[in-house]
Amino acid sequence: MTKTLLRGGTVVPVDPAQAESRVCDVLVDNGVIAAMGPDIVVDPAACEVLDMNGRVLTPGFVDTHRHLWQSLFRYAGADWTIENYVRDMWGKLGPAYTAEDMYVALRIGLAEALDGGCTQIFDWNHNHLTPEHSDAAVAAHRDSGARSILGYGQSMTVLSEFLETGPGAGRTPPSEDLRRLRERYYPSDDQLTRLAMAARGGEVATEEVIAAEARQARDLGLRTSVHVGNANWAKVGPVEKQRSAAGLTSDTTWVHCNSLSDRELALIAESGGTVSVAPELELHMAIGPIAIRRLLALGISPSLSVDTCFNISGEMFSVMRAALSSVRGEVNAAAIASGSNPLSLPLSTRDVLRFATMEGARANGLLDRTGTLEVGKEADIVALNAKSANLAPVSYPTGSVVMGANPGNVELVMVRGRIVKRDFALVDTDLDALADRARHCHDRLLSRIGSRFAEGLLVARD
Image (cartoon, rainbow, N blue to C red; front, side):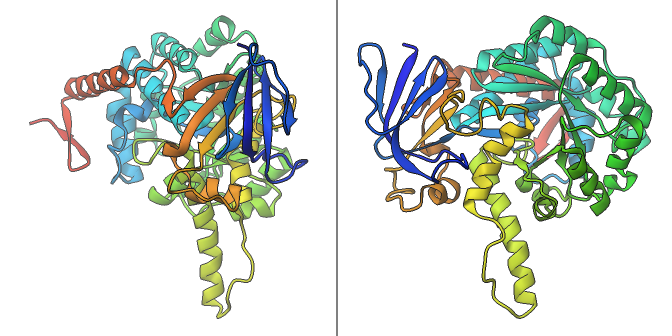
């Protein structure tokens, strides 16, 4: 059937033109939301009708920056510093990946995302070691059922120049294989999977490299994502460097931004660019003070991201709570230090749900299609079972989603109208087989490099 009616759920549309929430039906026809309202009449012989009583419906969550290829070593770096990460992930693990490792890591990472209600993921993939690795990444995206963007970055062997040159001095020209991918796999931007540029940026590369990658993205009609504001690396002035080398464009998403100067944040705002923040990861790995309040002061509503699953959870509920806690904690501490009590909140649950849906779609260039629940948008929909002990009874639906829900509440997930999770289980994904395959790739890779994990650190095998 091409039609599905979601009957009687509590809908949180994240659409500024609609009420915060209401109980209504949602009719999905040929992948698009065709109608929303009470008591929609359909022919049950031609339309699947699903009872959504006791469920909260939201837009699918959007992650605008996730290094999916690192899912093969999930939580291995739970106690790593940023120095451990650069030395061991960039310098040792990444360069040893096979094309099969790439495929399996992306498949299990995308399965985790969908299972948690994340329907749209920007895969910031900086380990394209060979064309075969790139082909494997494309296949994993297509096989997953997710709405995804493959952000093409350079390989770990290129990025590991950083270990020798230090910040901002990488000189290896960008790979020309990006054009092959665009022409062979992504001839249209109407596909469920898309291609983008994951640029090295000023903290990693020279102005010559920045300019070359910007030309590639422009010539191929691709959006760009770039890391900036990473702790002390930001001292090179990456946004100023980008402006000097290639100019600043509105189709660029700036990731992190923690340690950028006020001037550089203002340049991003003036350019119309978007921002992706990863508050949970940034707090753990000393990227710098969370930039959310500074961004909002400049009129930039950020999107949210997991970043990497090698040390934090890959679900967006934790990311939303980290965003909320970091901002409220900062403001509350300042108020207490001044001898006063906070009388208002600097950030609401409604704000962070918008960051995790609508602003994510904007950053990915897909807000005209996704990010809110409204008639005419493609049906990326999550249904949370609110009859569970951690959510019942629901008083404030948005608050319940942000503060109480977890992947175990995700009962149904739709991507462009196709059900990819039903009755709390992923459809057409054999998780047992995928997990076994991931373990095989994990162990085989460690054997190849003569390493093992001991108490959370990568050490030489005995």
